[in-house]
Image (cartoon, rainbow, N blue to C red; front, side, top):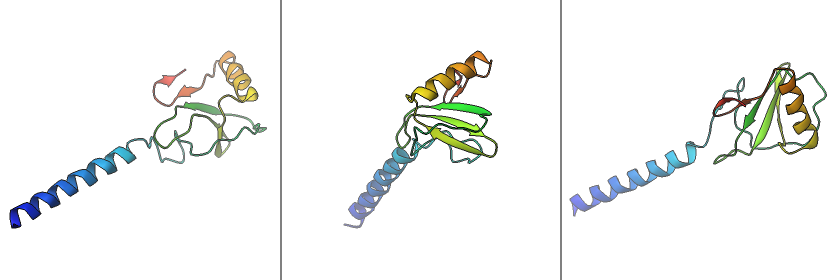
Length: 106
């Protein structure tokens, strides 16, 4: 009887570990200076100067987004918003293409 309880506990711990690994593997970055995961996005136009940007793919807990960095902050923008598409083209034409969150530069 004692042996089966230990096996059940071990199986429970292994299952719990697998579930936790599954749910945490989708989080790409919690670094506020270099975020690559957006839980909310906005179609609102950014009116301040954009210093850098990242194209973030959808993953477990993250929405697809274009992350624009401005002086001291960042914005998670809707990737298919008309102004975002134009801004991405403009930045690319200026020689400042957005980085991809998984592969480097787009």
